[in-house]
Length: 348
Image 1 (cartoon, rainbow, N blue to C red):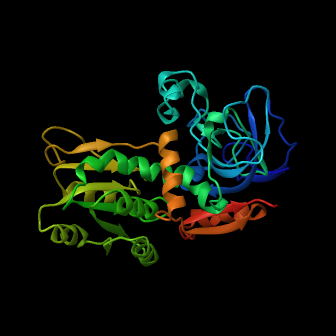
Image 2 (cartoon, rainbow, N blue to C red):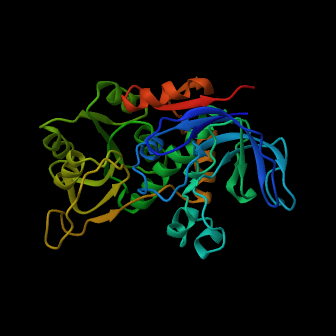
């Protein structure tokens, strides 16, 4: 089978021929239909040796949808062969209390594992087949198209988890701001519209991203410039916004967030853009602000995301490319030339 592999640190990924995996005890073999490509993959590719606990070589890809192909001995209690599924990507140790509760994203032993999940130290889904370590990592998708389901396992799940963490501040009359309207941000706009009564404002540098925000349901799309803070304050009658979800995490977006949050507001930093936030009391943040650092989400939340998508409330804007085009897709993502989410589609 073909697979996109990171063979060593500092190298570009390569399409490689591998033997099809055979599921062992408790494992499930999934024939991949589609795999999403995101900035986390770039973080892996660009990492310096020793910066991550992973050991190359391994197959990339942590946003995965496909069909169960075979079950290993004892892989019971989950989807059956032929059933279409999405893969829950943040594989934990499987035995701590967090993993037992479906919260592998917060695994207590994550720092000792040597991996963070599918495509993140373990063989992922940018391949024709993936070996999933346990049936508990699979969520049925029914007839949801694979190019829609795959990105929901990270871009959708992480956005949903971030919104869930600030939802208590988003009652009637509230305002939420989404900073950065890319693969995750455009889904966050839709999730906010579907699950809260808040007014949703979107901010981005790029005109095409602002257009995507409007198509996704933002009440107002605002360009990122020297006047953005004033525009956001004006849109809230001068009081500031109730919640900011920062999908960039760069210094300019963090600075903007601290400037427009109202007292008692919520700040969720989702992006890993290298910005730094000084937290002290008293300090730059308004009093009473709560800060969260969302990482992926729970298996139950992934089930809820899939249900939202199947209801029609959530749709991913995707660019579909065949697996052999993966190196070109990586290059385009580096240059910011992907609209929405790039999805690699496997041969049938």
